[in-house]
Image 1 (cartoon, rainbow, N blue to C red):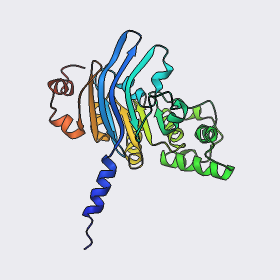
Image 2: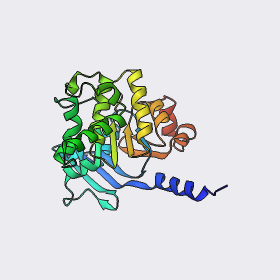
Image 3: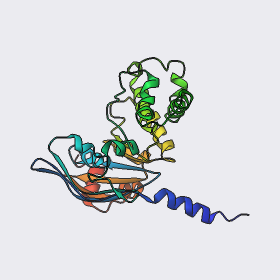
Image 4: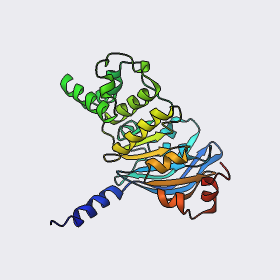
Length: 267
């Protein structure tokens, strides 16, 4: 019988190698500090969830990874966000190119007012990723297939993306995010506007996508975090209270504040 131990060890190390290394992140909105000195090593090819009460800094911290805070007029970010050995928090890094490497899916599905096809083709087109119509057709089909949407829309690619149901629109936004072959996908409460059936489909999709991507998800649902993620970070008042394996954080947290939040004493 062949020895597979070294192969499985290699696979495990690939899956858990750090993809995003955040060091000493502080975020300010004008004079108000929203994030306090957070450091976190986020592994690749897995799902990391951010949990915590509303207004605790989860989404603000998430937006540091692809510099979406740059778009907020009075926001200032200090610290390093290192992706593949490069600090992306410097003037030398083009935020537009960074966001092609770090895709984002928002809370409310936000398809462009274009056809289903053009929603997915938009990114590859502006980044010059497809040379011919055949190449673009393949990218669109592949992205929609990975997002679990191809069978539902393949005969209506010319119809507006805004005409789809809420759950389908969110999967279209995921297809749009993965069409440029990002390394990382950020999801900011991607299921909060969806019904339970659509939510289950998105969760199933997240589980499949983690084999290829580093996924970071902000969720207000602890049940969702427990279902979809391998690592969980608990935030409170702009600080990182606890970060570890999801099962350990939920069953045996090291901090009383985590325990109190998980058991519903506050939140």
